[in-house]
Image 1 (cartoon, rainbow, N blue to C red):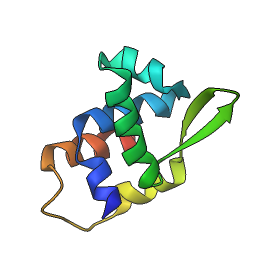
Image 2: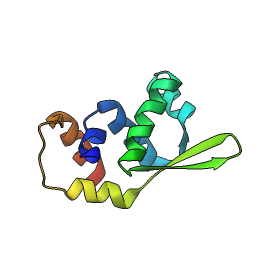
Image 3: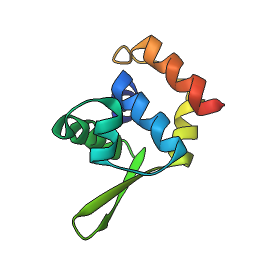
Length: 98
């Protein structure tokens, strides 16, 4: 269920898309997406809880990376849920499978 919650937000899908290209700091994601760092951190926590993103700590810096295996599993999932935004799921599949 956490996976569907994580994939139901366009902002989190954009984060995943960015993380397919490179690792980011939370502040870097916030800057690219033009959102505040606290809002970005909240979205990142949801992605971490779903197992889609991992964080490595270097001193006080947290670097985020994508769990590609979990992302591919999510793309192959054929389940449906009333909690997931259909257009968001389409966007997710579009970039996750390509």
